[in-house]
Image (cartoon, rainbow, N blue to C red; front, side, top):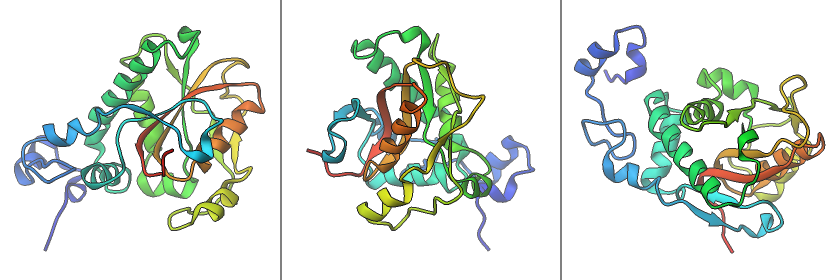
Length: 230
């Protein structure tokens, strides 16, 4: 019989650590949530310019979506490794500070972090909105920056895993909607946060949804890029 840490959700954390020693989510090395080598792979912040998004605001990626990075993000998103929220949230905060320091964003005192939304069914299955949780974690280390949970997906949007570029764009077309009552004031600059950039469909539709209510996306930050880059 095999167990994972989810099997002990009602057991005190210290006892769980004795029963199941902590292992790196990226490589399995015992002793840490994310070992130094796997953690380092989320420190390669760079600006990317996918062909489909060349007219969009600057897109910053923490890592490339492969190997240990892919394993780590899947463990956080789908594998119930909620202990990754702290290190990943810290990487998001560090990246946002770097973007602000570059001078590419003005009016930084009013900047809002907006996470790309997930389908309601996915949020229920995972037990949380994983990107919003990261944004709120990062917010703690970013004075003056706040998180706005102001986007949602239309019920008609279906699971996009396995869809090619064309079907993925069609699936999301007009499917990202603003949440009335949760929107920041018109003109408030937004940094959009997404987990994995593939085709760019999510970024495009999130930006359009915010633009239609007068809210500009001034930069995009993704945890990892899996797309072809120019």
